[in-house]
Length: 351
Ligand code: 5AD
Ligand code: FES
Image 1 (cartoon, helix red, strand yellow):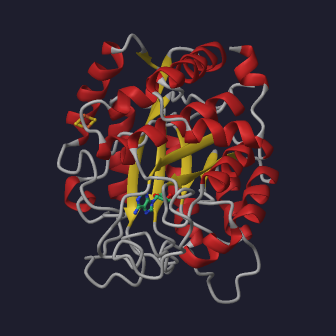
Image 2: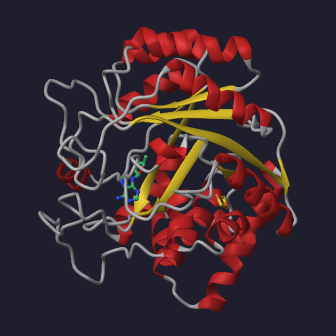
């Protein structure tokens, strides 16, 4: 096992990603599970996800919330609604809330700062933000207000592919990697990640992505399969960045486990969720298999069902019609069934 872990060069990571033999993959699963247990233990931390707004100014070619999708009925939650979700998350025993939305400037800087203060003064919760590529001064104001963590996936480390699927905002002077550095300087715990199997993503690129997690020493890393959304250009197969079919990463379940496992090996202490996208492509066992192959976090949705169905980044999202109450019972059962337990408290990065 040590041999496996000590030799994770770019070539080795790529070889693991290309490995399709079930027996040959067993040592990878075993190593990831052992490293997970050694560094972050058997606790599974639950983060209550609050989808605060589905407005977005961006035009990401893969995402259903993009401004270019005219079919989505837009919503923005009130402070009181968000607070109610946070209270519910606390009652369920979750130690963190994640406030996520599109890049929505209707969520004004001061309003979000005030909301963070309200949550932090009333509830003993860690607050994670996932609100897109906001201005550095806004990120600073939210940190001052008490936000603990920020999630911003870089989606792919290939600049050409990135430019293609993620057009810049006019006059934007910073990119995601600049922002990740800024977030770190501001004292946030920093999370990032990528999608798996975006058209145009090669094995080499994905191997580079995984080694980038290590270079950035990320505190949290979210990875999940790309799920085509027919209401987006990429989902309709438009403007695809063509690569040799032998090099194209498939957006499949097995590939997702490989990425989770390799991520655990390069970032032993990181908090790694078993994501909703993974649960979407295997509803029966995706979450559990993610947790058994390197992950240690799950992010149950606590958004009111009436909004949840409109937060349609991709179609067929797992738990779309389950209440927050149903998911919390379901998850506890699933976690116990694989011999793990629900973590108490905020569950921040251990150092
Ligand atoms: N399939 C899977 N994941 C997606 N995301 C956005 N669109 C899709 C899609 N079609 C992911 C991105 C984003 C996160 C919130 O959701 O990685 O950062
Ligand atoms: Fe939502 Fe199982 S986690 S129903």
